[in-house]
Image 1 (cartoon, helix red, strand yellow):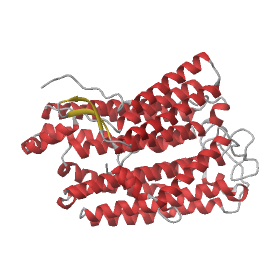
Image 2 (cartoon, helix red, strand yellow):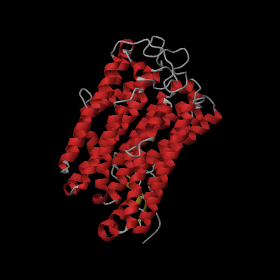
Image 3 (cartoon, rainbow, N blue to C red):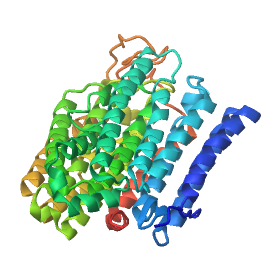
Image 4 (spheres, rainbow, N blue to C red):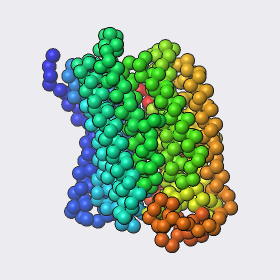
Length: 511
């Protein structure tokens, strides 16, 4: 068998565009040294990456870096969907970051470069066909975020969040790498498809403690990236300490990357009979703990963080149906994988809209504040508050947030088709629990404002910018950036459009 790997440059075009964006951002920052030019370069590069991924993914599946039938890079419909979503999320976060960068709280060149590098990892991740490519792409997505979380000047909370995120992520990466090494030792393969074929042809390998340890370490290591319970503790503190646009990226692009990585190994490499029960348990714990703890949150970003933990449980739920024989049929597995990807896409669009609305309603450079800081926001800024309310209602799965409603229906339907009716009941119960805090925050937006003074100092979690009151006092002046308004409008429109065309996302996710 020839060991010469074929190279399809068309398949690699989205990755080229993403990596080229990072290089161009560096050159623009070095040669022009103007923040607006650097930011515009990153934005144009992200848009070009999304367009390139859509064009390449619109055709037949393309494979490259192949040795025989095994390929390290497979760019099909699902990979294109992930690449487009990651690139558009990057573009949206760049637009949300305008006020932060203009305030001088973060250096523009480094900020845009790190976001472009993270985007490159996300684009490659969806097409990864072997363990090495998968882990390298996932770390390329994650590594820049360690710095971005702590890049806000003069913020102790930001530095603490960065250290927490770094330590936990290093542990998660170590577990994943060790699991991948043991999996290679047990099977002799690195390509996901080959590992799956070997374990299917030789079921005796599953009785080896080495294989059991390998599967467990890979799944648990990737569960850290998704912020699944009990590997979730880093997420709320990290989100709350990070700048709001970075928290938005962590909650959307980073979580999407973790889901894609976990889905890749579960679908192609690891045996469903082994991973199914683990994923079912993780899904139940994640959605239940996330929703229950979110009920007690008084800080906006921490509430969104715990809600994002619960949403990760909904994303994992379809994969839990693989624990049953009825869920391991070809049709049931296809439906489960498509439901997980589709729910992740619906979620990140709604989550971006929610964060964009919080950025628009908060002072420039401030953190997310408390729920009382948003009290009465609809009386002062009805359209921004309405967009936040729509995003929250969508995350809760209620109309008119049809995207969130169809997302939950898709998950429940895939569980029923896979014979996991008990897990569908757990999803339904948790969706009802989630209504409490989503609707409470939505109602707060239209409640009568208070004028209680803020006790926390500026620059700390819970404190506003100097001269800013709390609890919705008139002194709280929200961000007046056109780019933030554009992101909010586009994300809200996208959520509405996806709500009326959910099958389109499902069809692409199933490819």
